[in-house]
Length: 93
Image (tube, rainbow, N blue to C red; front, side, top):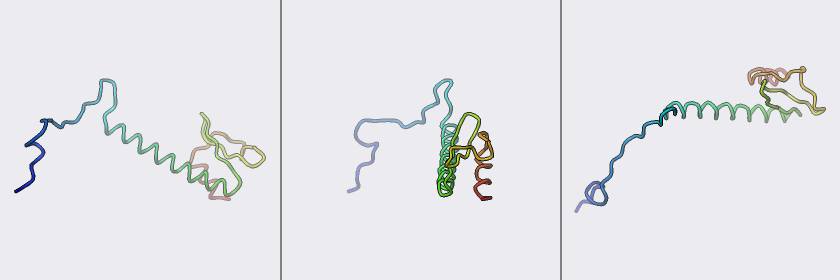
C-alpha cells in the first residue's frame, strides 16, 4: 500500500507566488539590498576588530567613517572616510 499524496486528502489548497504590493519592491530587489547591507555590516565589523587591536575605534556619521584614537581625536582630522580608505589606513600601519 502506498502512502496518500498531499492532494488526495484534506483541504484543497493552491500554491502561488504573491505579487508585490503597489509601490513595493519585488522579492528579488528586497533580497539583493539585504545581501548588500549584510556584506557591508560584516566588512565594517571586521574592520572594527582590526582597529580595536591597534587601540582605535571606527565611528560612522552622515558624512562617512572616522578613525578615533585613544585620546578621542580623529586620525588625519577626517570624519568623511569610506570603508576602503579605513581599510587601506589600517593596512598601512
